[in-house]
Length: 292
Image (cartoon, rainbow, N blue to C red; front, top):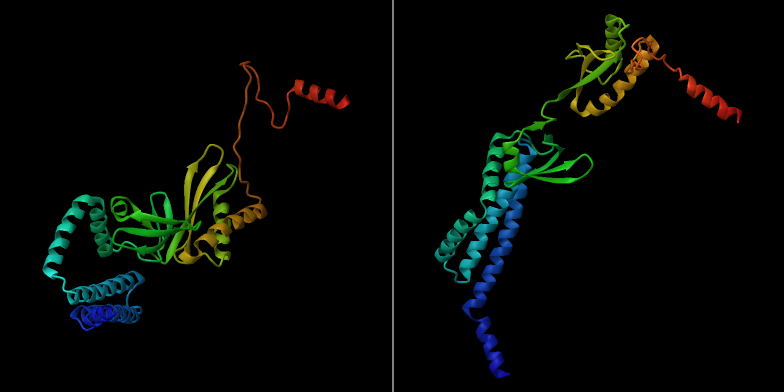
């Protein structure tokens, strides 16, 4: 027991215990200081910078301060920092050869941060994926789709493909494809469409609606009618204006056509079948079944 007690006293009075104590204190101070500095920088930049820049500064300052205190803590235990840095250099070279894809994503992430084609909170479309940007990191961009799925897209993919930012500008245009019968007066149709746009409070007066006659379709005259809305009202207006147009066409007795088909028999002198007229044999069959 005396020998164990003496060893404990020797350990608690040794330089190793003091080094461990200083290391723990440095790590605790570094953690608290990193939290404090990163939070202070966020408060300072939140009014002048966007969310993307604030997140980068917060993470960069946090890990930088914590790394400095961690290196100092290792020095307290007697680690030779020159050997540690040399080993880190060799390890980084090995990892660079083993992770060329990650390095490509890292470089692509730096390009994305410098170019800033979109920011956190924007809605983007990359390929067949559309969603809200949750974060822009060094290796990938995280999205949340409209059906609440989490999607991770590598930065290299975004650099090489077309990316559409749907919420970049404050207003958006809605392109409506309208089909009317050949017998309709196009000037009258245009007046009805303009009235629908004027009566809808979600349609912007400026820019004005755009009317484009697309041409003659297979069974209709095709019109593209374009209205503008604020980006937050885009879906509401798109869902509402089709219903408004349908009601307005019903009141104005404007016909929305459906495809027509004409059938002929093999006889070259035959006439087309009349609409809603069943063949003679089928009528007899139906009458027979009814009488039975």
